Image 1 (tube, rainbow, N blue to C red):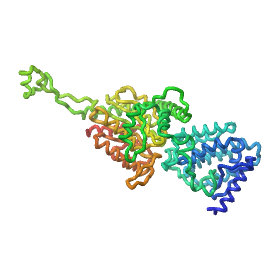
Image 2: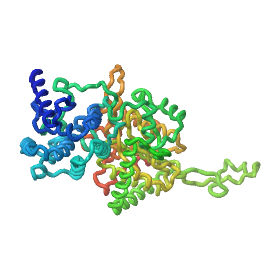
Image 3: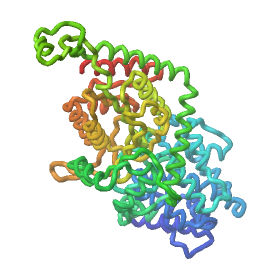
Image 4: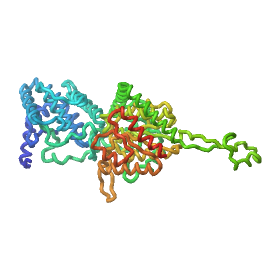
Length: 566
């Protein structure tokens, strides 16, 4: 660890390197690069200077500031600087031939750090960086397909303007991490989306890191800014408008919605907001760039979901047929018999007087099965960014469930949830009365965080307003609650809505549903490490699908068990 005097010396050295590369000694750099030991890095500070020289750094700085105030902002900044290094080097190399040698030396240093280690032992930014600089040396390491695409998009071409670079990085944040400007919150200490979790986020990593501010303040971030300077702090009204732009207009008027929030957004969810939508876009031209981007991503994901289903059409159709058969047989076996009055059948001696005095010929009884419409099924999909890696498979599983239950004549409702800022968005794809609405499920798209407890509470509210005697709720979730809005404990202390706190809150809401007589089960979509959370929340009514061929048997066994216990 450097002393304060040494840190100041390295800060001055970094500044000089930046001035030299930028050709402007009047600069007050907003970013400097240091190696793992805290020493100014020659090559990366030269790149910072090149960014100042060839681009409008004020435009780029706004995005860096937004990341600085965001949860996991260091990760996003690392990725962004990998992209900036690519375009700045390509712009500067012609003017500064020595920069090529500096880059080769820097690249070799990164590869030396990685020698003898498994690539998966590194964080996502370090794996991206390792591949990027391997390419600079004419070599290559294998990345998974999604990471390859990410790096290809990050390697910004030199001809882009500053605004175009920022726009491309915004698109990368949205597409790969489910993060848009309105979703960046400085208060969060939650977990990363699934694409980024579990990769050993630790420092020091590979190569130098570009930091904002000076060395003395590097350990404590400046928290003076608004909730994310990328788009600024949003008032409740602005947030409602933003989520309506992104996800569709509300199905409730303001008065009705406030009444629902008064009822549901209490205790641990006090101060939260709700938005219920069918995904219908607001009329008129949309001006919010973030919302436009979210819409484009959602529409593209719809196409990917359909393609994924069609690519595995045989297996998916077989799963529908098998699950339909299982559920239909269960319904036939377990439907209650009713004794109905009739003009023919078994004589009811107690009713003979009605024929004599009331001329009522219905003095017989006969058995008749109750209708299967006394049973409804709701399917709740976790649509948070932790599902980004498996959106297509979640959509396919939801479609299989929806179509199978529809073929059994059951009323089915499918809806999803995610959280943006303080607002939990409930998107309804199909409702009970829509007998042919399963196709809408392909509109599933993941983004934002997940406040599972509030989402399950909202499902409870929706289920309480149905005419059906028997109700089943099936969730498709990774059982990893994680939201930016903190909760206040019994002792008045605030804590993050994540880990044990989120799991216990979700488990409590599931238990409330079960006490109301609702049968609840979960199709687990997460990783092995999240299984204990899933078991704590849902107990034994839990199914984990490793391959679509297991879907009908695994889900059918638990579902028919729930129906049989009614």
